[in-house]
Image (cartoon, rainbow, N blue to C red):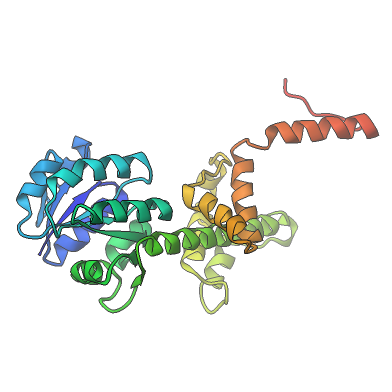
Length: 303
């Protein structure tokens, strides 16, 4: 078994290692020389210096997995790969691309005789050891070709991966998955903030989180991560309260509006991330000034 992997960040490198440890010959490429060198000594992994060299080393019908950020990186790489591929080859987009872009790419590549799978991937850095959850969109034949790799990447051969539907379905499922993730993370953060606001009750937050991990109905992998963070109170105290957002949360909120399906928790979690990024600073300043004007309340100013 051979597979090409483009993009050797935390997820791409983890996938390369997981497949190689299970007997797959992995031919991989990343623009960054340091990323290639980090995997160069790994058994079963062969790093090359460009896309053409990668395609040349894969025998027969090729399967190439992209593990790249959504947007220009996927678009440019797909455009660069297309002339190097042959009829029957399969391109798997394992990034978090917008599902409508995936539908467009699938149509365009099919007209060149190429197969395309949009693969939503969850599991993060733990996926190397625990396996990756895969949400796949594409034709039945495309999925059949990729299935041997999916079974090795997933937590178990029969579990943790799904052919969700036609092109776009995999990335649509991952978009909604990430929207749900936003909501769960927000509720955990708010809950522990409330707990922390009552120091007089002397609740050990780290021990409480650890207790909730066993038997509680709120136990989850995200609670596991939360519990780990709470054991590092000093490190947590140094963190700037700015939370980035990725495209999936925005797309999920927009989809809610377009479909007329209410998703208030997901949308409010997204808005809170915007607020942490300073997007609400002007509004807060204006609110403070209005409150001062009608009620004579003090306004706090910076030095």
